Length: 146
Image (cartoon, rainbow, N blue to C red; front, side):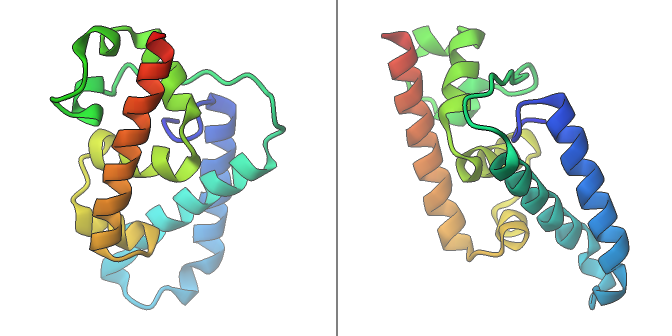
């Protein structure tokens, strides 16, 4: 839901992911890595859903569970962060990869190694993308405050 911003799209992506998990379960080589493997399928289903989504469609994002201060860091301006509507609009401006990495790290409290496994990228890349996503969110918040 945090990645897609729409309950119907999130439900569709989850259903697509569960179907894909079920169909591809025989190809899973390491049963201990099931969670990471399933998470990667879910994130990819979210990406596919966003690609299919018609451009210009109005989306609503529920940000109640996200602490804006944790996403943008302590050095960010405090005045605009408190405004949940501005934060929601700023979060919507982010791309799917930025929203996914912020959601996995801050909302799901995943360690960097888990995020790297889910996204199929090195830990160093997770760090740099997380930093870039935080900066993009800060910029979007500043734009919303103007």
